[in-house]
Amino acid sequence: MSDNQIKFLPFSAVNLYMRNDYRADVVKAALLSISSAPQNAKQTFDGLTKKWVVIPGFRKSVQAPLGMKIKSFITAFEKSPDVAGFILKLWADLNPDLRAQVADLLAERHWELIPVDADRTKLPGFLPSWPEGEDFDILNTAFKQKFTEITVNPDDVSLMIVWVSTRLPYQ
Image (cartoon, rainbow, N blue to C red; front, side):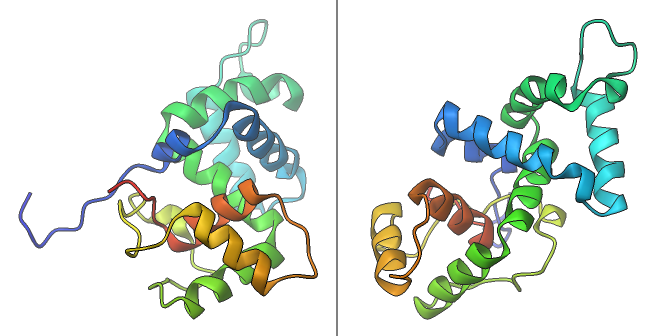
């Protein structure tokens, strides 16, 4: 790879930063929203289910009840960049206020961001670095100071920072 090419981490690399219980909560919340998602999201969901989900007793996993698919989707989220990106997009779409607040916070801190409503799943993954001097603790503290009137799970703030910025603090 030449020096002027941008290196990306696959969307599934987010798993390095997630606890198992939190990952399960994110996947479950995202999948429970699929019934109200746009038609193109439902089609993507069906395609990913066919490719990644195996449910004993069902020839076609797409026909299995959603509750039976969740565990397989958690495993797929850990392995597949496509599944991880899809789930993260669904999850972010469930939290539009948090997404806007995080974008506002990061813009104030001079992070380079793509538009909040851009489809990040079209990207090859996450950039592997954050601005110097930034970390999850600092950003969560700044979020609490900026938005004193709301209470948000710090894990949700951290995940939304990763999604909105399309960056992981890998390097």
